Image 1 (cartoon, helix red, strand yellow):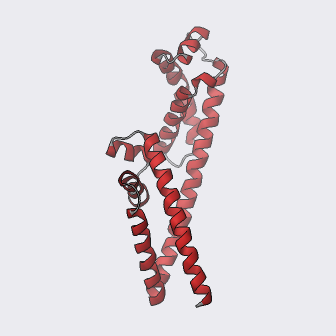
Image 2 (cartoon, rainbow, N blue to C red; image 1 turned 120 degrees about the vertical axis):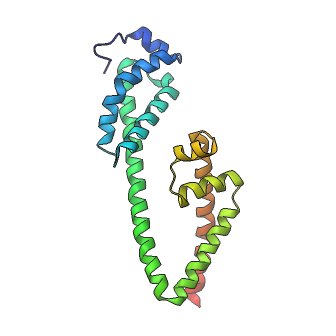
Length: 194
């Protein structure tokens, strides 16, 4: 799909591929409304649709050297945006399931003293595990998991790029998950035999 009704041609495309901001702006202005309308079908709210759309354009700009011609721009944007929207949807489903499970566990924990003690122990282990993270990862992890801030919100708050925030978050999540899996495995083992 090429820009219809504009002066988009191979010259503008080659300027875009070389990193020209004005050429990129022309492409953005044309495709942004089309893409955002498409993305809105997959996202739960307008804000998420805007974020996915903007991130798709960031990826387009970063990977512009891989686009062979003007007709490859919109398909690239569609594929990237769809993948991101599906990932967001999966994250939303996991969060909903986690919240439901947490509410269920929370109610049970208050009715059973043994479970309440176990919950407090696990919470303490989680907090100690988080404290073992490097300061930057600890901050990003707490803001994302405990305060429910997105990567872009965290980036604005602490003055880092979104990619740096994502890297910190990925490393922190891997560390916390690894530590908790080991600890919970040991707890389950002892519960089976004692």
